[in-house]
Image (tube, helix red, strand yellow):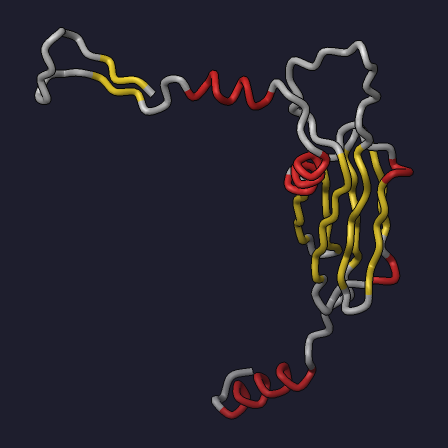
Length: 164
């Protein structure tokens, strides 16, 4: 960090500008220029696996960005207790002894994400597909049956009020 002063005399009420982030860029550049440990790579891979979950009237749809991951390296499972588990591994790039790394930002290692599915999910009909580095998992929903008792109760109340 550094304080920028506009004159040789320190004046606390002057318009001096202090940039708290000045100098941090070089610290980050130096930190990123060395290869990370395996633990850091694994942690980054888990943290960087982004998954969207949307619900439509017909299904629960999960979409995961998995660039550079082959579909053979991804596992989609439904565990007991209605838990959808998406796991896999991003392979680390092969390193040669003569290689000089300037920056390592892409994550590699194992990833694992879990989601508890709601009661209306048909866990025996889960489908998964992978296209252009995007995994799509579709979990169909059971049709919600409207209780007939509630409809009859509304009819009875309406009939009692003289409404048909």
